[in-house]
Image (cartoon, rainbow, N blue to C red; front, side, top):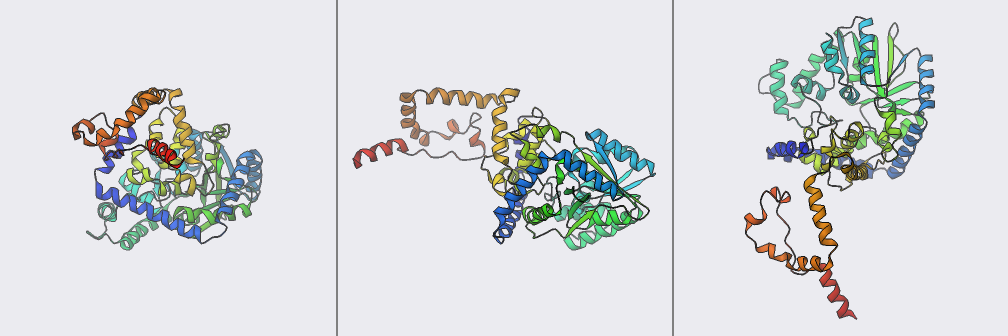
Length: 457
């Protein structure tokens, strides 16, 4: 698995046109985020407030969970607790079976991806329909999201047009985005009306009111929950915040960080069952409480899943979401994968330039890049450090510990500038496989500095 990312990235980069388009598209979203943040003088203050609210919430989880449950039950809702992905799936299956549900419409939920809900329910004979446009495209393609906010960002409209011709019977050769959106809406409308239950994830769980806030741009979560009397909302324990005042801080940060919008088109609260219906909340742990006990990494639970770290990451933008072995890509995915199973997902740790741009843009100030650096220091301890890199480091250590040899080597380095290309660009030079080697200066900085100091005395 240690070479998974490099091989998958190399495959992605074979299509240079698509790779360039992916890079520019994601950075365009990053630039929108910058413009939005610069319009708010108190942007950094909001980030600090969001971080403090999240740190408070994760350190007071038992109280907030009890408060949420008490208020949700008082509102007429059912509250369930799932310790892991298996319990999460079984609880949902039990609710659906109790009501003889044959078709479930659901809005985008990375928790359902994490717990592999869709294939499980489908294997049990339940028709699961994704209603987010990007997720629906991927479902028809039998593929997984490559981004947590824009799941189908890697797919061009021409490919969607061909897909809709085959699956929805749309007009041949028509790739107009508006037309394709109308075709998807036309098909999904029947699913909304004919389904037996609606399900959504949650962006924030408000302890003081017993409600869950869901932020979308398509209104599909609202449609799914409004058209059905049986509603399920599932979310991780990391989604809890104290009150509505706290939610106000996050709504100012979320959309601006995610897509460069002032706010999502729909910001909805689910907290009471429909008349004659049921509202179920499923609170999921699945390893999150374990992260709380990890001092170096517990700030990962601050994440509000905006995807800003992916949009700015030079590695993610140039290698695509599918080059990561964990189901969530990018800086946040590298960290979550390592927290989930460090041996299995250690190969993603190399997919980072340590530029720390992810830490800079994170709206809740998670030190994402710094944590990836910490994981790199732990690779040797779990038997996943690169043998080649260890050998290189040993060689550098040998050289650095011998000043005379170091200076002699430094003085001779410019010779490499005139060496035959095949002696430099070969299988031993990993850096040179996709880049030109830097040209060595005729004089080292150290040598220049010493001469300058002597002249100035």
